[in-house]
Image (cartoon, rainbow, N blue to C red; front, top):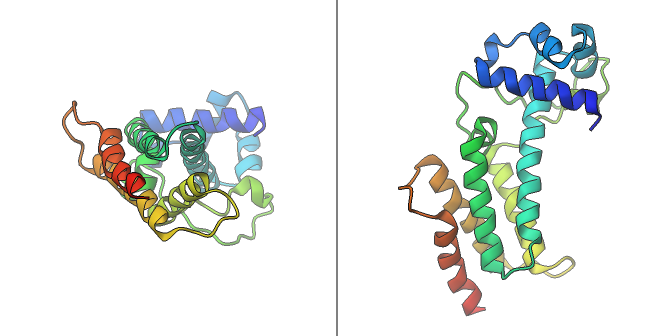
Length: 201
């Protein structure tokens, strides 16, 4: 991602931390990034386009973290536990990731749009027209990446592995929507539950 675009998204993220999205002004985002408002509009087309790009960046960042956890040279249960820990930590630290994972969007946040096409003259890759996946789609993406990482590419899909991967993510999400005591560890819960599945294989 070009540095100028990244700095604009950083400025939008900072603005969102300070005030609700309806109160974020394009002119302020541009000023923080050190560019003209026209440059901001040229890059994203509109405030909705900026919101879509920001949401897409944050969900992509979450998915990259999932991939890093799955790429570790560890046992399958430990890798799924790492995905669970990352999921809970990412959701606690980022309101956009939390909303994308749970589907609970507050009035403070930009609403996710699921635009299929547009008549804007701004290039589609810059408008981020695809929007962000729904919470169910995001869960499926994580599950499928885990299945591929743990089951190997090109091998027949194992329904039990898919169930174990989805269960790990859903257990992690339960900690996101209903936080536990400070000494409860979602990674340990996943490791224990999924470890039994691994031992039975």
